[in-house]
Length: 399
Image (cartoon, rainbow, N blue to C red; front, top):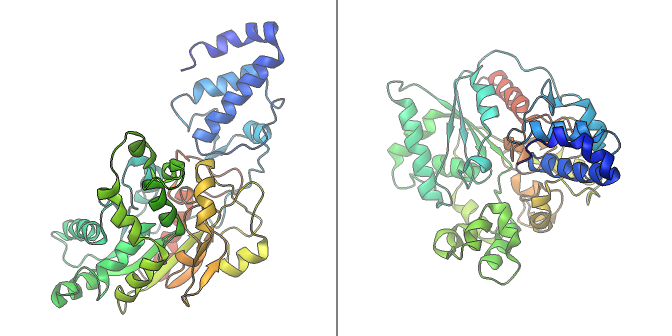
């Protein structure tokens, strides 16, 4: 809490000058980071202490405070303070023409609000399209999570037997979407049910999905067993549970094992693609403030980067440790590949079906998280805008 911060700051400046300026600058830097906006070298002289204190006060409970946000982007004053380029929005203006089929946003491995689709995305898309959000069981098995997805789609089909769906599936949810319609998946032993659900799916688009697993799962298993530092679990939202001394093994060890690269090879051999259903995929790319990969490596892995190669995203600091495990993956040929990643998933792992390109975003930015409510000041990436553009692409494809 920062009660009366603005009122006191003028008096404090007179008494302690630079100390107050530096302290308020540090507080503002920390708060911006909590809002998903990384500041590596703040220019503490760009704003006076009273202005910074006013921004802090306004942002105390709301990352979208007017003092931070101007027309959906970070305010120019804060761009100067943080040294961000603050480029314009990416791509064409989305249309107001709805898709032919219902959009379903399928959640990832964790359905808690901070790790699921941002309401800002869902609200923006729902204003134009018939769109729904389907959270799946947190840390469930593919069978458990896919049954949740199937039940949700059956509910949406009630009274509308001809309704079809464009599935937009985040992270592990992308594997669940594949499992739903695969001849080797949920209905492997029920041809009639399999044919019925396949007929309902117009398309599947996966976002930052570890189709070929992630070495982060291997590292998390070691952390759960106490063999390496447990801080890596924070990026998976498991740190608080581990800190409470809870035995995580029954809940997550089997799931993590299923997400390792080696086990994912077996999963993919079984869960073959459903014939006749188009698969699109998007990967995402983010890096440390001093990047590991150059433009050539990113271009080779991605084919195309949404907005262009010059838009380079900076990882949320919570992803710095897991990112060291994320860059290595199997590629489409089954060989070990090292390349760009988003802090949790390598581009080589996220590639499935037709890779449409890479988003300049980390693993959380792509769903408008964590607390990321503005156009990214480093890249211009706006998650709501991107998904409106994706909906236009789906509509143009006839779906």
